[in-house]
Length: 387
View 1: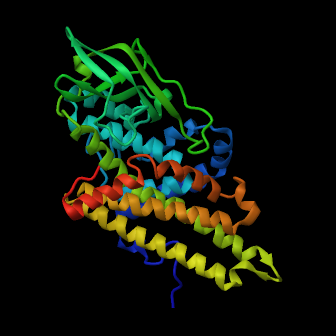
View 2 (view 1 turned 180 degrees about the vertical axis):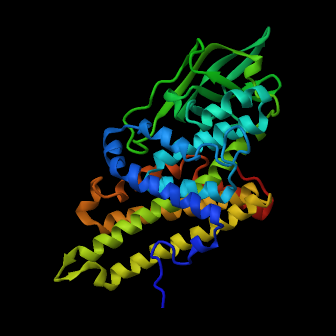
View 3 (view 1 turned 60 degrees about the vertical axis):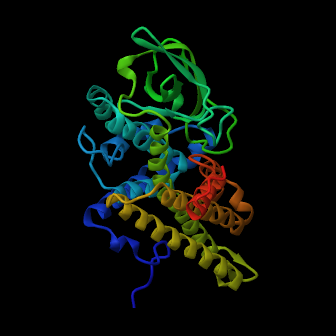
């Protein structure tokens, strides 16, 4: 009888198309060969591995779901699998690709002019241009409608003033997609790195997402030409639709983090002996390992179903909220329990669970906190907005 794959108990891989399997396998090889050997050191040194960007781009992992403009044109499930494998390496690496693909390339493709698409999308797909997404503000947190960043029309330009916070890729970005209040509602502005009045200092002293660039964005009477305004969207619909895309990828990504933790703790408990027998011979240990596998399997099935709905055009934001809430909670619980099973060894980055646990403290907060997603589901169930 065929033995089960401990990291894929329900053989999700067999439910994938040939193209989806190829995408997952190629992303997995990249993570195994290029990411895992260096990522612990990058986390320790608080360094984003920029040297990996060219290969990430060459594999077609940037803007992978976009049709045309030198993008791969893959389906939603394939994009989810890319996120899963990258986050098996590190949440910071998946965050880089999520921001580039879902939060910058997606809105340019969906809401941008043809000139904006031609200028930015091919360069971003090749990794020659990096983007960041400016929505969250220092005081705003989970309430994007309370936006203080303002843009005022002045002649043929817009004058932008304000600040954004917790911006992945901020200081390395060639273009920032900044959402600002105008007299005509919230608009999206493509702010280029060399524009006068724009500054993007890094956030330091982080204990999470250390292998990722996190910045603040400041706008001081920054002039943005009309050609840099996204023409096809006004209001919160624009940024919220981007967040839906990013949350979808997160629901897949964190599965990879959980799988990495389970794999490592399976190997450790097989070889670590206490009281004259391996740890995995203890019932208490097996119960905990089985619980990890159960939670991972449920998350895999949830994200696969969500991906199929996305590719059929039927995915709803509430369904994305449920998957983000469930799967990130699953992953952070597994990372913490895996750390505990490793004992004292688990507090070092020689093993991955403490790194994943710390990263997931950010993932469970950004793109909507757990409470936000619970309230989204509450509204779906009751029809009452309790925000």
